[in-house]
Length: 398
Image (cartoon, rainbow, N blue to C red; front, side, top):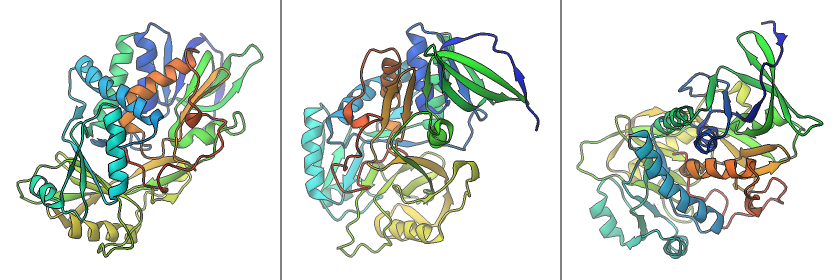
């Protein structure tokens, strides 16, 4: 395909690159405050190329770091506010359970209490009586405020509300280059229907997910991001009267667990699709421009083993695979920072979706100069070691 240059017709105040959940939330936050916003998305509405598609994500408040707890408190309120404004339920509070490492669960319970989230520790017997579709081997941390977010509906609702407040949302617009000009504005090159145009903005917000590093290249120095392709599955639900909370299970290889282990397990019931179960952060590193869409047979067998051992309410012989991407930082902490006239939201490492409306607000405040980045999320940070062992973090992309 040949491209030719088109002159810029108008500059914009705020240009958002990437129309997934984070970019859509930033557009909503800025537009609802009366700012001029243009949101560019490379793919078509409802596409399945990135990390924001699908019907369910866990809202799991089980964190200990203050920065995440503050985001959780704000997200907890904003999900309900967003649902009210959109006129549809986006977060179903089914509750959520964490189990596997008792010491971590008790530490999380204390942190949650300080943040205003109620929780309870259940014995194995009590948990299995309440959640008949699951088996447990340790004390269980139950968080009633947890539940499932409808990811597809959330993105559509955020964009609809942003447009209602005056934002422009354009699909099929691929940003191929970005540079900061001498006057401290940002210029991007955009491909659309055989043309290349240049758009200038007073400030740009980059929420390009798996394509962040490819887009920015050496233009901005960020913590390294590597992209993995993940393959959770939907197991058929057995005809068993059972209440299904969201769940996270840290498997201990020192015990007889009856399963191949590729990391922590997350899961939830997805209405109409079954019981979603996946390994957190176990996928192959890939180039998002050449995504193989190929699940690991060994990991799939491991998920079947897991369902057979731990999920009596799921049928391990009947399942459908799901494909998504993680854009990971080495320390699994987010990148939320402004570098001159460019704000970046990236590196959500498979646990970002629960925070979507609060992150949109955070990015908007960064772009408006109303706040500085928390050190944990700084683009210039030295990679920090996670509070718990690598890959133990509660996952939001389930």
